[in-house]
Every structure is written in structure tokens, then in C-alpha cells.
Image (cartoon, rainbow, N blue to C red; front, side):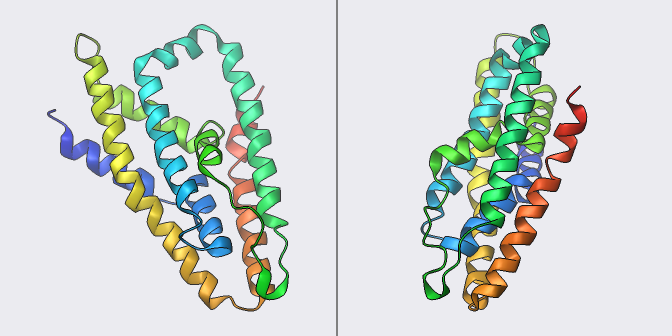
Length: 199
């Protein structure tokens, strides 16, 4: 593929830059540690690659043909993001047993992509920029999705590790509680673009 390096740079830049995925990864790392956050990390990266693949295989055309589906996806996604923001902000902390609540898992990471405005924008941009209509559309889309999958694991994983390092430093539960409140608020703010687009 002619644009391999361009796709890779785009994938790395979009995966490592702050957004809902990285906030969720940071929160999980801070609350349950890196090892327990691994299913979420894999869910986020696999879910995004799946989104790119589906967009490239025609889902974007379906959404354009049936605009009512976009409305349903946006409303459902916004409600899910608000729910996750609440869960992060209200995470129960009980002294040394903080963060023993069930961490978000693989399925949460996958579903989260469909409520993530940044994921929608990046996946559509990737498909329209780096694939072309014709006989090679499927193989091109598969390559783009694979690059995003491979780039996403270390890039989002860095946020998990950063959260895990914060966990070690935020020993008093009050500090971790404050971090959860800030991360929950930031995730809630990330819903604003989606809500503004809902008519």
C-alpha cells in the first residue's frame, strides 16, 4: 500500500492523543492497575479496528442512506458515555481496598467505540482518506484496520500504564477519589459534541 507510513503516523497520532478512549484507559489503570485493565485495552483497540473495518465495508453508506440510524446511535452512545462518566466519578473507594469494583472489560471497550465521537470521526477519515473504491477496497480496508489495531495497543496501553503509575502515587483514597471525579467530568465533557449534533 502506497500510504503505509502515512496511515501508521495517522493511527499513532489519533490513538495516543487525549480523547474518550485514553481517558477510560487512564481511569482503569489508576483504579485497578495495568494487568486488570488489559481486557479493556484489548477491547478498545479491537473495537476501534472493527469500526474502521465496518466503515470501510459499507456501514458509512448505510448510515448516510438511513439517517435515522445515526440519530439512534448518537443518542444511545451519548447515554452510554454519561453512564460511564458517572461510574468513573462515583467509583467507590474504601481505603486499601479501593478499586476492587469490577473493572470495565473487553466488551465495554468494544461498545465504547460506538459512543465515542472521536472514534467516529477518525474511522471515517481513515476510510475516506486511505482507501479507494474498486476491487481492492476490502483488502485496503483490512490493512488500515490492522494498522490501527497494532498501533492502538501500545498507544492506548501507555495511558493504562500512566494510570497505573498514578495509582502507586495516589495512595490516600482521597487523591484517587479526586482523580476519578476529574476523569468522570472530562469524559462527560467529551459527550458535548455528540449532544450538540443531536437535533
